[in-house]
Image (cartoon, rainbow, N blue to C red; front, side, top):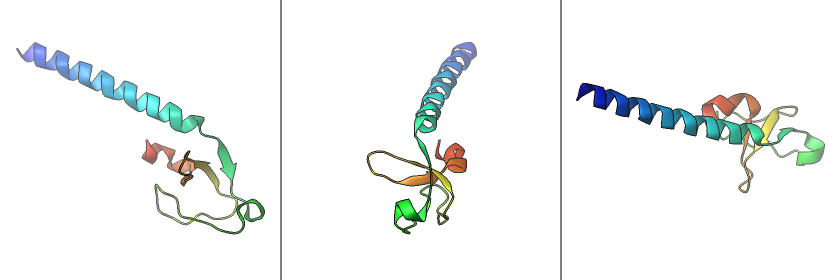
Length: 79
């Protein structure tokens, strides 16, 4: 019975790892943008992951369709 539980745990962990890989792949496929006051109208928001304010020149990814942004370096936390 212990082997059955261990086998089930391994299957469960493999499914979680596959899901994590799929989410990370989706996040990495989002386009990267550099914030620029000329393009963004000078309006800066906060990163939805680390909650720190953005600065001009920060590299971010934008979530469709809501438009929320996060620092490219925050992707590991987001996943």
